Image 1 (tube, rainbow, N blue to C red):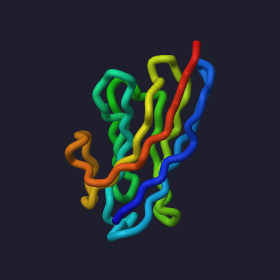
Image 2: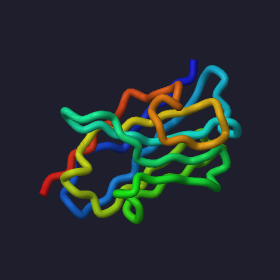
Image 3: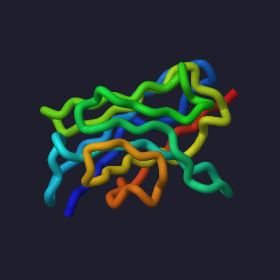
Image 4: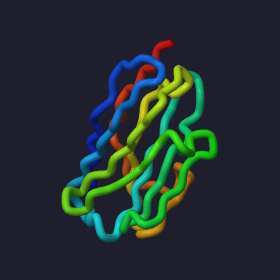
Length: 126
């Protein structure tokens, strides 16, 4: 079974930065054939797409509202994907989830991902 473990969440002030990491392991996981993504879920809201990256890292996609502030990247040698979040706003407060799919191409729908981490809380205060 593929396991995803997120880290790097926390509480910050508006305008500050955080970098989330997601380490993948187990099952049939291979950095060279799995696309990865980040999603988030705020209280009372549906889980939403944040960013996605293909197997090589050469293709990325972002939610329109986050372009320019968030950057997704990956280190296949470490089986780890990152989410750099700059200029954080209170509305970015949510539980952030890492996801993986056993296809090399990135995707933006939650239903496209078979594997999920447990989530990491990000809280941004004004």
